[in-house]
Length: 220
Image (tube, rainbow, N blue to C red; front, side, top):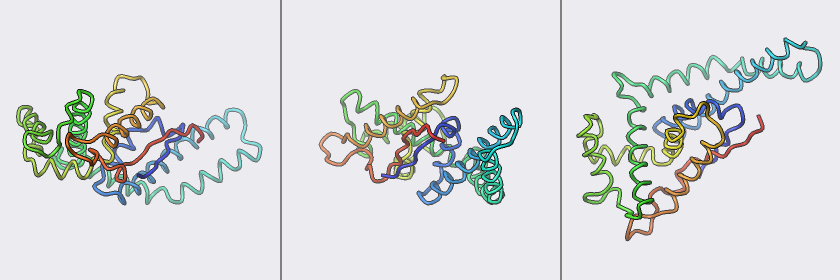
């Protein structure tokens, strides 16, 4: 399991972190998360400096803020370029990017959660299992790119370790602002997926080794 602590500033930018984890492999995800953190830090420093300008910029702490901003600005162009590429892959051409794949994976995750909560513990890849259910859902709803079980299997394999974040965000979609409760919910979902097994199986729905854990750390 991989740990990505979200601080008090970053928790308000969870949509950017969801875009970051839409990358297709762990190395790209972690690099994109690093880029998002850099951007959030820049925005946070801008707000801090703006507040200081109102009251005066004297003092060693203010000099430190300016120094931090200067250091971050040196790396900004490259990180902005990289995250722009991530967003491009997320959106894709004609809506066929990683966003759609992540949406499908999160739908699979929701069906797994429903099966666990109802106590049916359906298999994911078995005949008449969850992937087959999702395939029928996609056909009925006219969703392209999710009508083939082999495609769904590959999507689930790619994103099963990160779907808990997006599912938790969706459950809080009507909240006025993202907050720690979203991450608490994401952790509950992560544990549910990694601590329960399909009926007659010994392996969990999601191996915790492939999951990203998003604890909340209020300190910026």
